[in-house]
Image (cartoon, rainbow, N blue to C red; front, side, top):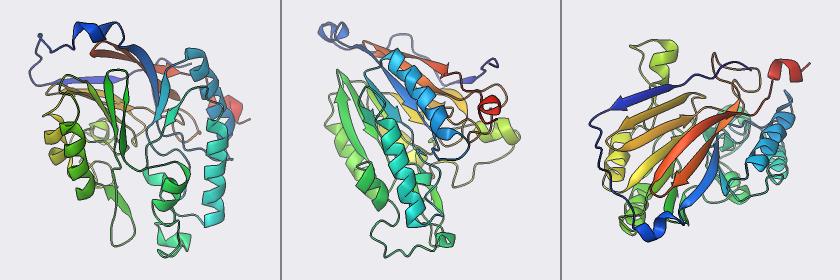
Length: 302
């Protein structure tokens, strides 16, 4: 396997004295979870075999739960209902091999029939995000695990031309404010969203002066970040770019988690194998590691 490289960005003032939770919680607050994003499952390209290998690795690691980062399937945007339905079936069946709970995040590729070339009418009962909600659950929600609070957001908006872009809608913004306001101040928070709030992937991959498109970043990120900074948010987990980065700003780590599928099951990005994040929690602190689960697309597809 190639050596994995990643980029860490430290921005702003690092404060050595960070708040901690009550001592009574520290010994109980030790656990791990896996963040696996951009799986892009399909029957082609041996993707199912690759995902099963990732699942075997996760089961051996035995985290408390798995959190996906969106783009679970490949692809419902421009597909007929029969194809999209079969992809959801394949994904649900395969993910049942995991031996721990799974929490899902909506990605752009889970959106059904958005592209006009799909031939799907907006009147279809599963159009847009409805198929995802019917198959995998709510598009945004929160849950608690031990003394940590987890928030999962839907960052996918639709244009009038039936394309997607990155945005957290006004209904979610109101909900997010309420959810965090009702979370104990001392409770650490993790936020998960598919399209990044913050990323420098484009500058690294395309050039230092390259900008981000509306489909590559949450367009109202400043609004969301200003809300998160008012609470005990420690970590934002992101996907979409198939890039591994850890950007630290104003006390929050924005980590884009690579991709289980790497370059859509066709091989690796330079320096980055197919993989996922294992995140270890201890008290109110966390550490992370990118796990290369051993898949070799060039070998496996032959």
